[in-house]
Image (cartoon, rainbow, N blue to C red):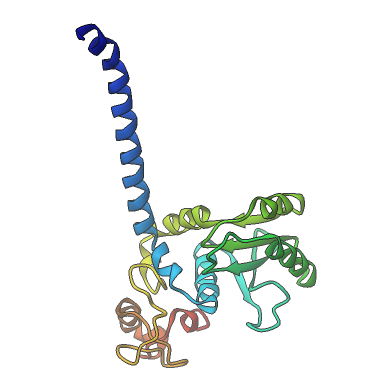
Length: 216
């Protein structure tokens, strides 16, 4: 019996260390997800997700053109950086992985808007056929993990929490109470309100949502 324990001991230690490593990795991943604010994004409608991406791309240093909400020819945003123009399609709140149709639409949109590149961004994941088709057509894919990486990258900047929709608070929540935008009437978070109050000269003393702050 003693001999058996001596033989089994290294195996038990190894299994214990593996279990500990898995637990640490799981805790780290959960903390990372909470810090990113991805849970708030999961609650957004399609239009809110597009508006959020507009803000996100600006934070990442892109110039952003907004396409019409209806009849957008497969691109919800057109972004440009370093002279490269990219058609972006947003896919949110999907219970299934994103399929090849999104890739086909992104490719078509790039041609319509005369973009050099195309991209699909989702808070979900992509099917294998979609990934293969995207690779063949040089379509950049941002899945849930990639989106979390981008969110965490901008959170390192102190200014990113100011007027940030969906981070910390769900700034797009529909409510009849609390501060609202003076232009569109959309509910805004208390952080957005305080930012406007701290910059009254810039906003003419008005409370504006992040979208209308950008057009000032």
